[in-house]
Image (cartoon, rainbow, N blue to C red):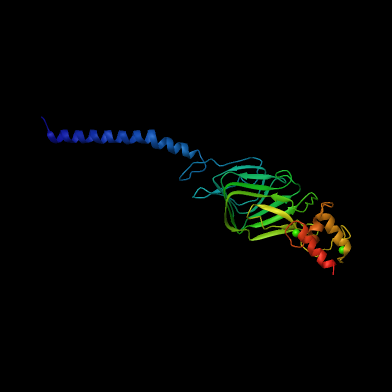
Length: 273
Ligand SMILES: [Ca+2]
Ligand SMILES: [Ca+2]
């Protein structure tokens, strides 16, 4: 006998079966492969999937901790040379490029947290082989980290020499909480000019300024300013004598980085009645 209720029940079951089959199809075709693919990757961030990468020659990056927002935290000391291909890395300990000196190149963003200490060595004039450099392609955030400068291999830089130890795309954060140059002492009158560290990323060899006109005897000023000092100043201004750090320290009267006529006039006034 034809049973309408029975037919409806059959149709309903068939519909359920079709819906279930569709659901299974969606699972197989879309969701499961996506899950399987992602499960092979160590980083899954909301916007991008970036496999963490770094040169094997870099040390201290094998124990990275990934955070919920996809940033990586290096809790141990990081050293060596090479490239870090990570979207955002946070350093919490010592960062010292090279073996050393050396260069660390970070393609993404980097943060030096309050517990981080940069140990940057200078042992020559060229980056990577002579002195340390950290380059950050994206945003470098310095959150009250420490900066230590170290002279190595008996290297003594000269007045005016610049060492570009930090590069960044964008600089952010509160800056360095401390800058320690106790392991990079320069012979007097040289001293470190650190005013450019958070401007251009450079440490510069400056001089202590005496600006007293005491230039003679040459290379060994005697504390007296007289005609002999006037003559040396004149020879410098005439281009007959190339000034060194000592001459700049004593003879650059207006501290503008050059010894010229205006300095000479000041020295003349000290000597002549
Ligand atoms: Ca003198
Ligand atoms: Ca001057």
